[in-house]
Structure formats: structure tokens, C-alpha cells
Length: 217
Image (cartoon, rainbow, N blue to C red; front, side, top):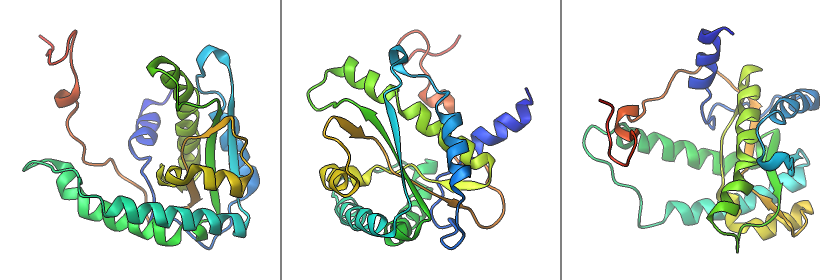
């Protein structure tokens, strides 16, 4: 396995918002190829209860875009925005991320393809174990889809804001009551040059050895 290529894929699969090409069609065959790869991801008890809604219909995208914009307005106006200390890379990135997120909210309905990963089952009354199992059976597949898309020159972004209005989205898309939507991935060819690794908090700050707060000796 070519570790350099693998590492580059894993460290440059960014959330793409402003650089999504809103005018270039995405072939259905390309989306389907990425989904076939996604379904090789792990799934709890080999349940394979996953489903992927691929939305290209303009009316459906417009409806989802309306819900997303309403949700983003609530999210952007929240009073409990995270605060970061001096030198924390997340603080420096925050204004750019907010601007990028606003752009996506304004243009979501124009993105060629919206992919909604779903899973059979509901989590509202489930315990921690059941919730982890349900989400753990779909989120790895969704990430694999994003990696496969990136390898083919497609950008995507992990979003969840439309879940504020999950029932309304379900009515637009005909999602059954026993199915949980878990994310919304805008998918399009990306514009501009290649991506680079993001500034992140060092792994040493968030790694605990043997017990919480433990450090490697």
C-alpha cells in the first residue's frame, strides 16, 4: 500500500463549501462508485441497515435548502459560541469557517448532488450503547464515501444542521418514520488547486494513555 498516497488522501479530505463547482454536473455513475466503496465500511453486527438518499431533483434540493438556511440562522445566532485560548488554531480559523458556512447555507440548493446517509432505527429513546451502535453503523460509511469522492476530484462537506428539521426533510424526501437521517453531504467537483492538511490541535493534547489525563512514558 502506498502510504504517501493514503496519508495524503486522509489529511487533505477537507469540508468543501466555497470551492464546490455549482455549475458542473456530477455523473450518477461516479456517485454510485463512491457508494459501493462506502458500503465496505464496518457496520454493527453486520446489520447493514444503511441507506443513502441521493438528491438531484431541483424542487427537493430547494426544500432542503430552505430548511438548512432556517437551521443555519438559528445556529449562527446562538449565544454559546465556543471560545478558544490564545494560540489555539481553532480560534484563528473561526471567522473563515463561519464565512464558508454562510456561503454554503446561501447556495446549498445549487449544489449538483446532496447525499443524506440514513440508518434503520431511531435513537430518541435509546441508551448510550444503542446510540453508539446505530450511529457507528452508518457514519464510517459516510466518511468512506467522502474519501472516495475526494479521490475522484469531488468535494463534500459534513453537515448536520438540517436535522433540526428532520421530520420536515423526511416529508420532502419520503423517508419512513423508522429511519434516522444522520448527515447531509453536498457533493460537487471542486474548483481551484489541491487541498492541504488543516491546522489542528496537536494529537498529544487530546491523547490519553491508560487513563484520562495519562501521558505516555
